[in-house]
Length: 147
Image (cartoon, rainbow, N blue to C red; front, side, top):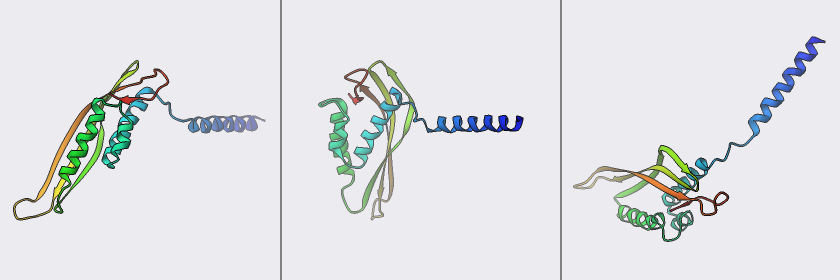
């Protein structure tokens, strides 16, 4: 009898542990703000500038930054002897969320490799650190938008 009770206890404990693992992670404002910034940079990296603008307030700082990055990418990708790699490195500081405002700290790295020519060879590495401000227009139910 004791054996059956002990086995039943462990089976119930196993079921509770497994159902606890299935629950989705908590979607906090911090996570959602970071996800929005990450998606913005992935759109720029993939040269989907129209998509990147969808994550921003129209006419805002980050909306205009899309045009700057498009120009930067086009200028640094010219010529057959070089190519540009852009990647999202990490969030270099914890995200700050206060009410319907958030600040996400993102680091972007660009790597321009120049193939050997008569005068220039090697690579040029640039690191950009951005304090990205976001707002949630329809607080608390709206989506985060880059200011």
